[in-house]
Length: 286
Length: 267
Image (tube, rainbow over all chains, first blue to last red; front, side, top):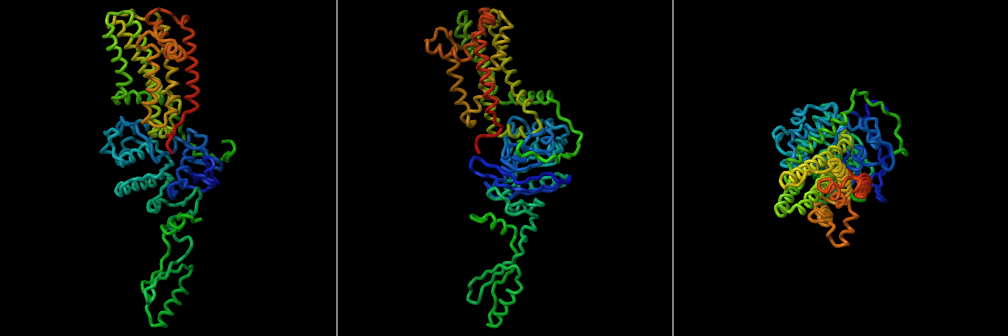
């Protein structure tokens, strides 16, 4: 395996009793990239990430995180990763600065405490006890505690769920700054726009299986399809999907011209990532 | 994890990184726990002031009645050992687990044993402070003699701490969420302190209650403390009590370790 791979997952499976939460997924995350696991709730995103973080044992499959098996929970791995869990508690009676400073002491080569507080946008709240923080501020403290160890790889499990739009934008900025610092990020989200905005590559996951994988721009046009829509003379809507719209358009406009009619509301569009996502994750879709 | 062995791909970047020394990690955690303890008013009250308040009240009621004071002082000392370890740890571990603090800690390089040592050290400090204050109050305020057998006092306190701390952690595994933690803890703590002779001489209790108390560890701890502080009965006289404490402690330790979970119960 080349040295630029941060995470390698091969045929990963996880069963809870008879329920198959993850059914044999494979993907690779390269160093320095932001990789998004995109999928609806219950798709198996958190199970996958928590196996990679070393919180859960896998049923089968091969997993390497920074070249190590997270199932063995090696201390050397925990030194080099930062984890933002979907939800996790805080020491309520500590101030923000005390919490970040304590966490810094858990690592051999931590980042500067003040710098980390600033990076997370918590300067104004540094002297507040954590129990007085707003939801958004608590999430920023989650970031700060995950980053203060100066990790190479950061796991973000649904980092903006429940945020208002302004707080989401701020969290996005923090993730982008991680990328600027050269960190590798594994992000899970059920927000399509978040994956589009942040991820270099995205895997769409549903019912424990990966349905599609690629750059957000590629995913939208993975299958070169065009959707041609129009209304005919009496207002009836029509819609056709085709790999090559040239012939269809030619016939359509030719027939209209021959009848002396107009083609109303004609549009030709390529499906966006959103269309792909909705189609792939729709009920009953395979 | 031997059935899905990883390829030896570990060309992990040879980063000259060691690890934080265990002793340093445990000490920092201990200091943090102490700081948080004093900042949490309800913890400070229930773990610290309540036994002292009980001692003051009963001391006032029994003022001058030396025989009663000789029962109540070691009784409250035994209760203090149980509340600072058993009750405090059962509540604390449940809170830390259910709120997700344990899971967050589990994802850091902090060694598990150093973390638990910090938490246990915090509880033991409270016990030592309490027993010290109660002993002091017994002699200075209530006019009892100083403990006759310091060695026996230390042995019983240490064994009591180990026993009740293990049982407290073990109980936390049975508590499903933090809201119900006080109910679980007090459902054990209150009956046990009443039948074990904290507030009266347990030997005067009806036979069936005495039988139950004999099977539980607190009465033996109080008997041992009473021997050390009042009657002068030493370790040899209370050997069976030591054995009962050790058995409960051993069982508690196994259950505490086996059932330990870093993750909250709600899934």
